Amino acid sequence: MLLGIGRSTLSHVIERKTEHDSPTFYGGALGAVAPFALFLVGVASLGLLGAPDERGFWPVLLAAFALGVLLAHNRQSYAESFVRGAGQPIVMMMVLAWMLAGVLGSVIGASGLVPALTALVESAGLRGGSYVLTAFLICAAVATATGTSLGSLLVCGPLLYPAGAALGADPAVLIGAILGGATFGDNVSPVSDTTIASASTQGAPIGEVVRSRLPYALVAAGLAMIAYLLLGTGAAPESAARDAAVETSWGPLAMLIAPAMSIFLMLRGRHLVEGLLAGAVGAVAIGLLGGWIAPAELLYLDRESFVARGLLLDGMQRAVGISIFTLLLMGLVAPMQASGVLARLSLARRVSSRPGAEWAIFATVSSAVLLTTHSVVAILSSGRFARQLGEEHGIPRARVANLLDITVCTYPFLLPFFIPTILAATTTATGEGSGMPRVSPFDAGLHNFHSWGLLVVVLVSIGWRGSFGQRVSTKR
Image (cartoon, rainbow, N blue to C red; front, side, top):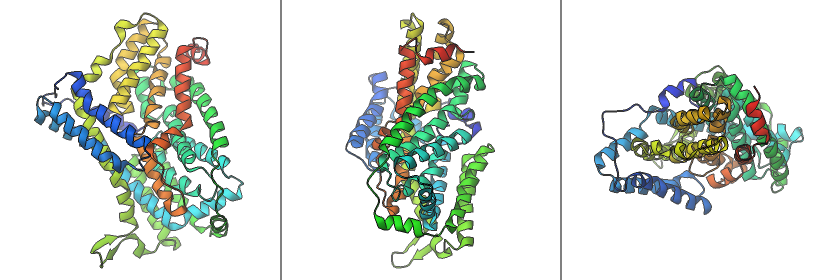
């Protein structure tokens, strides 16, 4: 579940048609895509330069919006489409989730849980690469159980990333492992919205789709686990940090109840926002009862600066960067979608064989996810075309569903302009107080070895008819 906002999300993902005219552009399809192309070039450039957080992308998005206004025949229609895209209910839910997760992470960070958790992990002998591998497995388990990749990042990131400082973990590889584990669950969980979307568009049973997808995911996960184990060890931690971790009180481990509450509610099928709210409230209550958080730390007035401060505000402020990025990005994508560009992606007329059909499905859903930055939208917009090609060329429905789902679990978790990589990079801010540096979205995606493995697996399974992917697709 890429957006991770509950099982009922699918019916609300695609915005219903309105009475407003769809925007048209000078230059036709090229004009419609030009603003997004400017955004991609700008973000890629900043990513390669090591942009530390999502705030550097704001001016690029505003420049892309300005270009769209200039290229639109009807500027009012373009602006209205942009605002409707930014104001979708799904975007508002994401913003609320960011804020609640920020509060949860802020309270947990101040409670002393991270040093206690570090001491617990170190006592188990998990250091360096072995700790990074453990972080991958924990996130994979949470994401598979809950079906939400972003929810798993929001809950697990603030716990697992800061602990890496005293455990000798490489920062970029560690956040890549956390992101990779979230990717694994998004790909194989039967309650993930990408799983539901890919299976439903092909008319395939979810159980069959998940079973046939496991070999792909497990091969990619196996390759990733080896890489995390071998490359996950960073600089040796300072002795002071290690001593502090060993001597810390174990009492704050009770704070783990708070994120456990969030995970439990998501497992019960409750809304992500409800789960995060329960976790945040639980963290505050447990911290106060245990004496690990003072009431004055939550919210107080800084009379010298005439502003309010505290853990609650600090947590909410963490969400500002990714929230504004999300609003602008979803606004930028909406006019392009409304212009009908996605409908022109069909390659059916050029397909004459089964391998060609599979390459066409892969290319179409790849283009859709790159243009919309939304996995479920990409699956739904290309699902009918993929099903038609699959039926014409005898490709099993589960196989087509797997091509769709595996493909959309690669780019969004690798490229620096997608929300998962942005969110992973934002999460690394929680480690600054523990000695862990912030990691850029580019580096977070670069070290997501699981998604790189998925991309290799899907390409091999299409290009090599005798590969394991072909055999799996015919097992029924």
